[in-house]
Length: 274
Image (cartoon, rainbow, N blue to C red; front, top):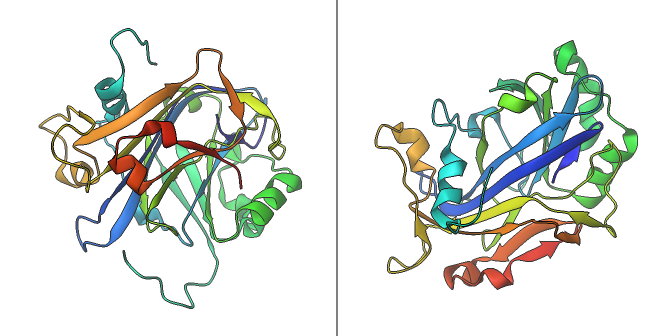
């Protein structure tokens, strides 16, 4: 269900990717939503790693859900069958120098790295109770398989894992016409086995502000009291599908081309490997 720095068990994962214009400057962006239930088996601090198809992330791109910690739950409710139980802005050529930013977000201490090789030297900035031990092979995997991807290392301790709110972050994607959500699986702290078939327990959700207004997707019931900034990054309608109930899939991320999404053809969702 995700990549962890140490032994862990994950379930009830909800993944969301939406394509839209930034509410302030109008640039084309993707919005990623991520939530799961984690059981930390590492006997100490742990972390989950997320790779995003963008060169650069800043803490300001993480969107606080505040008291609206059911934003992804509402998207699932919109598309779930009743019988299912459910837990373009251009880059400058040179770009910023690779750095690691460390900040607090909900129950996580997050390290944002433009280069995963910079993470070990920044771990001392994580509070000791959340500071995981990282295997070199895991960071080597990301450096080799996901060049030009931003890496988010979300550090947590045993008590925090069960009460985490959804992560919501916007970014400028490498390919605006391919929507991807991170779903590589390895819960031992080592690099994932790309040839393995792994169990899945995922709701995978997508949206686009270019979707047809008539009959596309399912409406999401956002509360009227929701803060304006948060609402501006959330969709009116979504499509989605549940992968689970004992199902296994080849290890990889989920993705769909934008034109297939606009057609509402979820059979074109791909399991993608780096």
